[in-house]
Structure formats: C-alpha cells, structure tokens
Length: 353
Image (cartoon, rainbow, N blue to C red):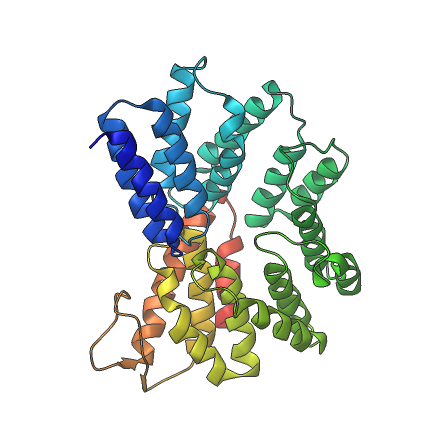
C-alpha cells in the first residue's frame, strides 16, 4: 500500500483513541513510515503531533528526539519550513528541559536563550521568554529572580506567542501565594475560580495550589478549594501530566483524611512510571508524607507496572518508605547540584520533619 495512505489510515486510528500513550505509539509508527520514505513534510507534521500528544502525559520520552529532529531539519532546510510552526512546541520543550535532572543548567539556559532568539527573529516580543524565565527561577527556588521576570513579562507586549491570559493570571496567583498574600491570591484568582478564565491545566492546578498554601496556615478555606480540586480531578481520566497536582492533594489529605490519602496512592501511583524527574520528585514527596512513621504491612491494589508490585498485594510500609526516600533523595541531590543551591533538599527535609 502507498505509504501516504498508510499514514492517513494511522491518523484516522489516532483520532479514535482517548489514551495519549496509545496515540503516541501509533504516531511513532507513522513517523517510521515517513522517515523510511524520506518524506520531510510528513516527518515534520507527525512529530509536531506527537509532541502535542505527549504534553498530556507525565513523561517526555519521545518528544526530545522528535524536537531535536525538527530543529536540525529546519536549520538544514530553512526554505522548506516555517520556523513559527514549532515555536509553541519549543516553549513546551524548554519547560520539559528544566524538569529533567539530566540536562545541565547551562544547557537549560542555552535552550531558553535559543528560543528567545528564534522568537525575536520572527517578530515576537520577549513576553513569552520572560514567562519561561519566571517559571525557571520559581522551579529552582530563586524567588527574587522570579519576581523580576514576572514584572518584566507584565510590562512587555502581548502577542500570539505569549502564554494565555489564564496561565499568566495563574502565575500571579502563585507568586502571591508564595509571598504569603493569601487574600490577594484568592482575589486575583477570581476569574479562574469562576471559570471565566480557563486553560488546559486550569482551574484544577490553581485549586490545588490554593489548597496547599491555605492549609499551611490552617486557613479553613483550604477545604473549600480541595473540594473544587477533587471535582475537577474526577473529570480527568488519562492525563497523567497532572501528577504533581495530584501529589499536592495527597499531601493535603495526609493531614486531613489519611484513609483517602491511601486511596489516592493506590489510584495514581502508576502515573509516576516513566515520569519526568521533577514530577517523580513531587510524587515521591507526597508518598513520603503518607508513609512517614508508618509501620507494618498494608494490603493494597497496586498497578503491576510499578517496580515494587507483588502478587500477594501486601506491602511492607517501611520498604515503601525507603523506596520513595531513596528516589526523592537522589533527585534532590541531582537537582540541587545542577542549580547550585539546596532548594530541593530543603523541600525533602520539610516533609520528613
């Protein structure tokens, strides 16, 4: 059969699926066909599609090689493709780079600088770049730098490459929460809370963040936002990219409803399999909050994909604690070594205190 027809047939199958990983596996088959026939156009479009599908998962396994191919193919054939066509995906990849402990700080910052250069030469302002830098410094615990970049962003021209209004609003809410300005954060979040402003991760991520920060100071409004977050979570089926947000809810439940925290553990633990390093760290912290000071054996229905699965469905809680403690410690050490501070180990210490 003609390979073009084969690819189109595969794409029709992709449209019928709901699980992102199933879609990705089919797209990889289509990419193999395109590459075998030296079809750059198909190779370009299919890789963009693959990256857009993997954004809905907790992992970033296939997007890195796919995007590296896009960059090298464009740079070698600038007359055949439009650079603007992959700049939005480049924003996603720059975020994925910071979440991967195996990518050095210099490499992460070079990726962000290269993205800035490409956006500028296509006529875009620095607003999207400033937003990326805001989240980078937030991620590594450099809050003063984060405040600087969010101010620069808000003073810059908004254009097609900028993050959506809901995402930019959510970042202001997050900064207010970090600064302890809880009432200000809730006021800022009004349009997200009422769903006047929404995006792929919102309002769920905002509700999780509000729950966490309000609970830290024993503000009773945390319970209200947890209920809103759980309502949103019940609508999420296959999008494992929400793993860090689920981890926030688990940590809240550890203090408020331990039985439910265990239910979350059983239901979502397999989302961490193959996940990005930063998401694995967040989930390990949540698991440690559940497992801390727990002893004995617990009967649980654990997904067979997990490395500690056993057919008896009985788990030594100390062994589970040690598993997640080692994972969290290894990742904290790697991230802190990359960033030159102790931000990740500080988070781990707070969980174990």
